[in-house]
Amino acid sequence: MSEAGRELYEAAVACERAGDMAGAFEAFRGAAKADENVAAPYVGLARILTRNHQRIDAIACLRRASACEPRNVSVWNALGQTLASEGRLEEAEQAYRRALGLQPEALVPALRLAQLYEDKGDRRAAKEAYERLLRRHADEAEGLVGLLAVAEGASLASAIESARRRIAEADERDAALIGYALGKALARSGEHEAAFAAWRAANQARQRQAGLFDRNGFDRRIDRLIELFSSEFFAAREGWGTASERPVFIVGLPRSGTTLTEQVLASHPLIHGAGELDVLTDMATGTPDRLGGNELSWPETAPHLLREHVDAIGADYLQRLASVSDPGAAHVVDKQPLNFWHLGLVALALPGARIIHCTRDVRDNGLSIYVENFALDQRWATDLDDIAHYWRGYRRLMGHWQEALGPRMVEARYEDMIDGLEPQSRALLDFLDVEWDERVLSFHNSKRAVQTPSRWQVRRPIYASSQGRWRRYAANLQPLIDVAEPGKE
Image (cartoon, rainbow, N blue to C red; front, side, top):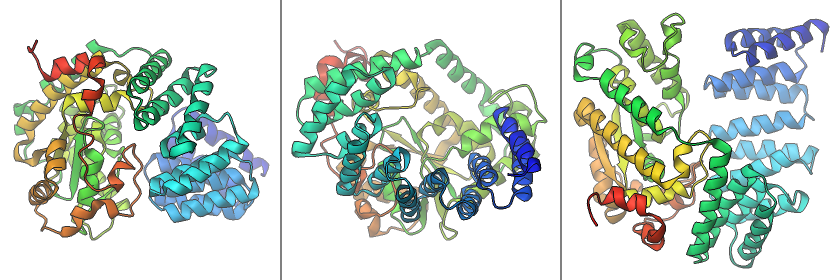
């Protein structure tokens, strides 16, 4: 790299670390012009573009980087990961294989390749890939977690024993990571008491790592949303935003059937499933910038937004959808469950959008949350009392949104979907004003990538074994039972 290119590159990295993404982008672009055959500036540009959800442009930058330095393993890794996030799994697989061809012992591409096979629903290939990885990296926690998810028979029994040994010496992060997966493996093997003990230990480790849930802060957040987004607030802004009916939001608690609902809808030729997008959160948290760097943060910025700001938010969201969807799709589904926090912004800037609120028996839903390995910031998910508290608050907020959104929001009960796939599918398609298509009943045959914990469930026909699952663990679930049956002795 030339001296001028290095100076620009270092300035770009400094800007990126300081949160100045616009400055970082310009400096990376200058470094790329100064040294057109060096990969690093293009990789930097790709990072900025990915943060801005411009993954198509990011992929172009990474392909340029791979052409500059075709033996750079990290470039092929980054390209594979970005392609996978766009659902371009065949191209991602090629990128990971190029990385492994250059460095067969490399951990990252081996792990990503195994996870890619899971996303594709290829259990056998995933199992073989995890086993290869563990032969080279015996102590790799994520590899063992992956194997626990896909192994069967003797291979599963061996993985369970490995997990038990590994947990005994693991730090908090790995103890939680392996513990969640061990619990699921034990449950599949019928060892339900041992499974719950593993989940309890995993959640205790995660809580020590992440900290306690702030119930008071959570309650204040809900109170403030209900106060700000009143009927008077929306009446004063009627007609703002974009009336496009293309966006569809699937919201609810995690593990409430959002992936199943999206998979069913996305099997219709006129509906595109975009997966869990972070776009709405970015739009909300970016509102201070629209106000010229206002010191307030969302949702306190909401009353200060002018019509021009709101119209621009709606247009920007539609542009983002266009960049990740088929142009012929009548609807594009954003199934980020926690978008329920931002339905005030949807009602304001996207008044033509439809919202599907997925619900599920809190006992089954809460259990499914408790046994899942969520991000560190989801502190509420590590304690059953906290899950019950979160559920109460979430239901209170959703009741408010239902009043605000009226017929634009419909409830989709997981149990109803399981008990009657066709009538529930017809009802959802009617809600979206889309004609019936038999292909939605064969959602499990879809070849689209599924990058959520429900990836294996939605590749099977409808089954009822997940209903009433809580009963196996009832002795441990009193907080969830209490919230499901208030006042019952």
